Figure 1 (cartoon, helix red, strand yellow):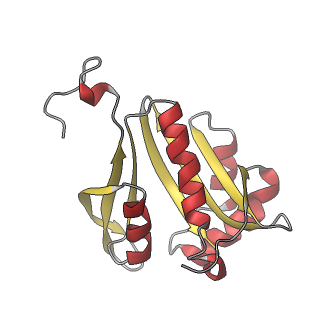
Figure 2: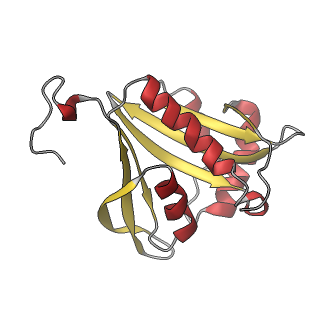
Length: 167
């Protein structure tokens, strides 16, 4: 890995929307629009983070939606020139710390099987492949790997009515 990039992780706000929407267009074949990102600012179940460089520009961002005790990472994106510098790891660490602090049962996300760098990154943070969604992605058409990080507490471990058949 190249030298770690110094960033400041902050909650996404309206001032970040243009840069994050531009980042979406660079990173994804089906990017979220600025309007879709703006809606997340008012969504009580969502937490979106921006990684800012020393000049206050967005170099990366990540989104999380929480439903009961489950965390769904919706987006992780880093400017191509700032990849492999620890930005995504810093964003993920905030969500993992949040999940532990709020006693979520797990964090989960979808990733393209062809996105080896992301799969390695998630694996380093403890995420494991839990399944596959057929033809999840378009442009190009591709399955999605479901990767999940389970925590040592929560309903699946017998502290209150979880499904005993759940792995």
